[in-house]
Every structure is written in structure tokens, then in C-alpha cells.
Image 1 (cartoon, helix red, strand yellow):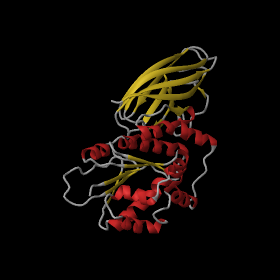
Image 2 (cartoon, rainbow, N blue to C red; image 1 turned 180 degrees about the vertical axis):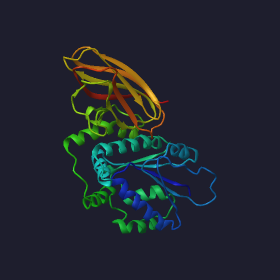
Image 3 (cartoon, one colour; image 1 turned 60 degrees about the horizontal axis):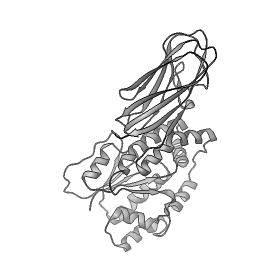
Image 4 (cartoon, helix red, strand yellow; image 1 turned 90 degrees about the vertical axis):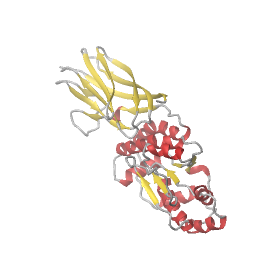
Length: 330
């Protein structure tokens, strides 16, 4: 029997399924060890003479996909819907919706590499899968009667996964997201869910309200910022994560009519500086600047820092959005 690898971004589906698989598989394999991996954990890739392990991860380390490929393992990827996943993470802290979306962007950026492993099986909440089928997928060559017995405490072998998760979810006290919070989650995470589903990230949008105010660290930036005063960092954040690869960033600003030749410096950084561009605000309107960056560490958050390089006596600036388009693997 080989290691059983299950990767699932944080969600009601992952919470229920991890518990189900751990308990049901241990009823089939009583001595089965369970290994929970986080993004910075190392994986024992030595020649194992002992038994198999159940490996569970919501934030898989980048080496897990390579480990699965080398060992000819077929990971199971559990993918819930965007909004219940975001609400689940909010409730777990509790944390703000912005912080929850940051965490989800990290998990999805890391999980996508595992979903690209040959033979990986993606399971969505609404797929209609029975508990028996899910357990058989993980357990391998085991008699049906033993699997049916293992499913009994969870509603029986024919119970649908989505029904089991809904029943568990109804008993929890997850927060209800506002319309703005739902839009934030969809804009930032929608393309990353596509990455996990088919290996190609969709277009992402980081809205201006996801950024923070340089004059008051930790505070959400206002829609329109007065730049009167000294040279300084005016916007920074949002600390979202991206999958490995080459990306085009389109950063859009709005300038007021009284802006007067204000030079802005925009730096894109992760563990290292990824890119830097400049824009000279000379007249009113909406303007955009493009930049290409290469992301090599999906477990590291991305920061976009906007600085006015000289003091200003008047003028207003708005950071409208950052649009990201995936260009190629690296």
C-alpha cells in the first residue's frame, strides 16, 4: 500500500472530509499514521520500508507535488466553493475577510501544483460522490464490505458527500459575508480556483480596497487619497499569493485635476524585489502601467508598494486595481 495524499484548501469540505478519511481509514488500517503537512514542512522522501501514511495538507509544501510524481502517487484534491471557504477561514481565527482571502490565495497557489500531478483526482463538493466511492479512492484495494462498515458511522456508504458536508456546515456558526466581501473573494480567488481545476490560472483582480494606507500602517486605504506632504509610501499590500510562473501586472491609478507632475515609484516584491516601474502623474484621469514579474515562491506573499518620490502641495490619487494575467510557466 502506498502513501495516501489528500490536499484541500481550508473549507467546510476539507474540515469534514479530513475527519472522515482519518477515522474511516483507521478503521480499515488501524495502525495507519497520519501526517499533517504545512507549507514550510519537509517531506521524508527516503526509501520507506514501513507502512503507508495518510498525508493531509491544506497548505501543501511546494515539494509535495514532486514527491507525489516521484513516488507515482495520485493525490486527491478536495475543492469547495469560494464563499463558504472564505467564511470558514474567517470563523477559524476569527480573522477579517481580507486576511481570510490572503490565506486562501496561499493555499490555492500551493494546491494547484498538486492537482497537476498525473492521475490526480479532483473532487468538488457538488460532484455527487458517495462516501463509499471517496473512501475506496483513498483506501485502494480493500473489500467493499470493510469499506461499507467504515462508512456506517458517517451516514452509510450511499450518503452523498455534499449532503454530509451541508449537515455539518448547518451546525456551525459561520459568518455571513457582505456583498463587498463576496466580491473581494471572487475577484482575488476566482482565477486561483481555475488554476487548481485545470492548471491554468484565470485573470485575477486585486481591487484598490485590498491595499493598505502608508500613512497609517494596517489601515485599509481610502478610495481617494490626498498626497499633500512629504515623499513617502502611500499604498502598500495586499499580500496575496500567486502560483509559480510569469505574470503581467496592470496597475491602474486615478489622478485629480490638480495633480502637478507627481512621480510615482511602484515596486513589486516578495522575498526579493520582483519588479519596479515609474509613472509621472501630469494630468487628471485614469492611467495604467504594465509590468511583468516572475513568481518562484508561491508560499511567499506579494507586496505592491506605491511611493510618491517627491513632496506635493496638492493633488489626490486613487489606486483603482491591479489586474494580473498569467503568461507562462517558469
